[in-house]
Image (cartoon, rainbow, N blue to C red):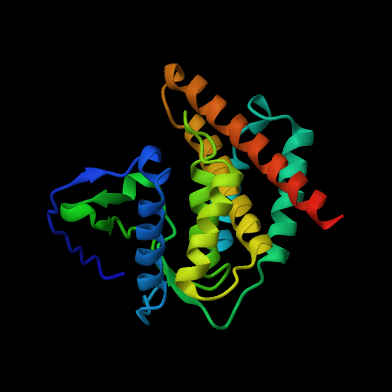
Length: 227
């Protein structure tokens, strides 16, 4: 909050989906996350994905004509899913420091295959979703890559994570967090659509539509498992 930035150069390479396919790297990621989540570090800024990002972007989007990207009916459905996601991820008095931008570009493979977690720009003391948000974000961010991380592969990773954390993870909460992360991308993407040059708009239109499909698909899957 006071603008202080710390940086250190670390030699290495960017983490890839191909790396993630290897169990040894999944174990490294699980160990790294567990060390961070259980460190006791309490970041001074609280983080609520709905307050800090989803609602902020949605309110800004309402100044534009979003239906040219997504139909009014679909937008209404997305807003209803947002309302349900917020209800399913209630505020917690016992938060935890989370990274909140847990994507492949922010992992660095250094010497002796040590994994580093980079870029804490969005990190904060998470009061909605807790540690589950980092896992949900990771799944959501990898749904649209050329080589996506499937739900089956993600579940295998969560099994490894549970051994490291020595406790059962709430899968339902994780997937609701994934929906929350996708909602961030939907509203942010629409906002970007209206702020970029015309030649760049097709990219962001497709970006938004894919993530809308992701929200609807994940929500449908959650309902199917509940029934």
